[in-house]
Length: 218
Ligand SMILES: Cc1cc2nc3c(=O)[nH]c(=O)nc-3n(C[C@H](O)[C@H](O)[C@H](O)COP(=O)(O)O)c2cc1C
Image 1 (cartoon, rainbow, N blue to C red):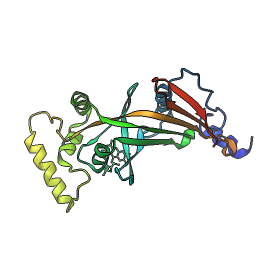
Image 2 (cartoon, rainbow, N blue to C red; image 1 turned 180 degrees about the vertical axis):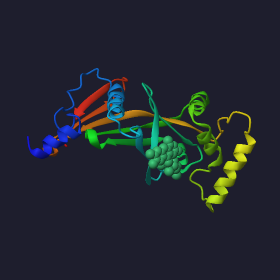
Image 3 (tube, rainbow, N blue to C red; image 1 turned 30 degrees about the horizontal axis):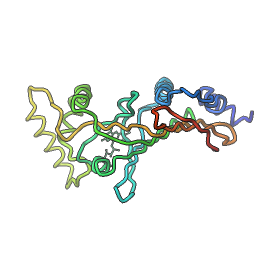
Image 4 (tube, helix red, strand yellow; image 1 turned 30 degrees about the vertical axis):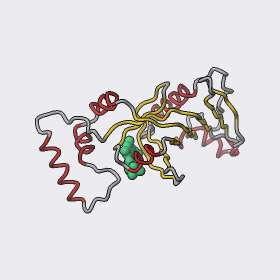
């Protein structure tokens, strides 16, 4: 092993260039694998390990991408929260397909997901909204996310107005705010390896509900 590879091995806690992705069993669950890689990233001390790049597109196919925080993973898919009147929301409402990508550099790992998107229930959004700090809840009410803001003063004035409105009471879930769930149709795991001979393993959802797997050249 070269000196560079040895250093990488130390930096990646031995995972980057030493351990590949094992052959997936026919019944392997890629959502569980996603969860386990995210857990490893959190344990490695990566700040905001749940930050993902979320790609959406207009019905005409013009793409846009931004970071969001992944707030839920279960067998139904991947959940993030946002303003339902934002640019991403209007793109998703018109074209309910999305892709996400997460990269944990120190672990030399990347995961890509493609899927179809739907809004989570209001009850699910409300339950998550409850867990946010009061400041973030006020911020959700105050922000007209993605729309033009003439100056910072206007935002601060809106925040003051929301604070006054909810003084002495709970900050409820705004009707224009909530979650989306990406139900995956494909999930690709990428593990960096020495000499750029990386491991790539793609799980594709079958019509039967199970997953097929395929390795790809790096
Ligand atoms: C690390 C990180 C995490 C973010 N998390 C969220 C999030 O969970 N929800 C959200 O609406 N915006 C989040 N943002 C802000 C978005 O990147 C983006 O600016 C905003 O959602 C407006 O995007 P849009 O105009 O494409 O709708 C985050 C930004 C960063 C850098």
